[in-house]
Amino acid sequence: MGMPITVEIVGANNDKDISKVYTYFKSIDARFSPYKRNSELNKINKGLKKDQWSDQMKEVMKLCDQTKQISGGYFDIKRSDGTVDTSGLVKGWAIDNAAKILLDAGIENFYIEAGGDIAAYGNNEDGEPWLVGIRNPFEQNEIVKRVKLSNKGMATSGLYVRGDHIYDPMHEHKIPKKVASLSVIGPNIFEADRFATAAFAMDSAGVSFIAALPELEAYQIDQQGVATFTQGFNNYVV
Image 1 (cartoon, rainbow, N blue to C red):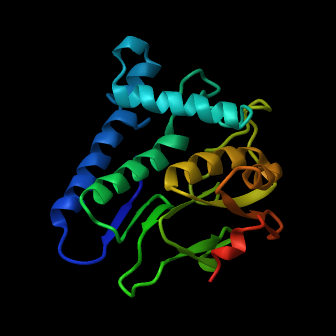
Image 2: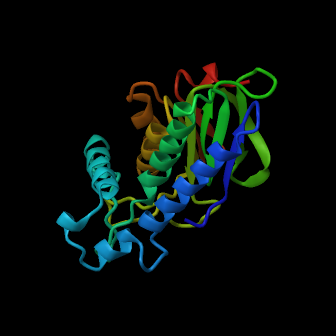
């Protein structure tokens, strides 16, 4: 869906396993991309009936509905023009599934990153947890925090890279203006990604929403450069 993907595996040559991961991502892109004219998602937006949806699409749509309920409506795939876009959930879901491909192959130490969303398992080549940086949204070459991740996922939501693409569905799709970026660490990238998207749509209330959810931590930077974080976030900081 127009984003770079990085896969790093520690250990022996795993070209076949990496190939499986990229083949999987290509299939997901073909099905869920809002930019490909013949994707299943765009066919749905043109009237494809629910009984014709693939099992993957049904699963994602069900998870989107579930996330909408948990977030009190702040996670909403419906756009103002009546179409739907599952990108706020499907990226993390796909990375999580790609991680399961490697885990099922017996690989324990690896890192997958797609568009800033990260799944980190086991340890890096030095035998230590993976080190991941959180960028300064106002100066993207600067890292403001480094966190260590092992068997965790981290997702960052913000408007500083892709522009206006996250909206507040509770207030006529207005754009959140108080928060510059929100990073969420979770037990896997699926949980981190979907709730990072929902929390960012809540604007400054998002970090409190994350704090109330089990196994999730957040680091929020507002438009004045002030950071707010959940109680357990410092457990990950290097």
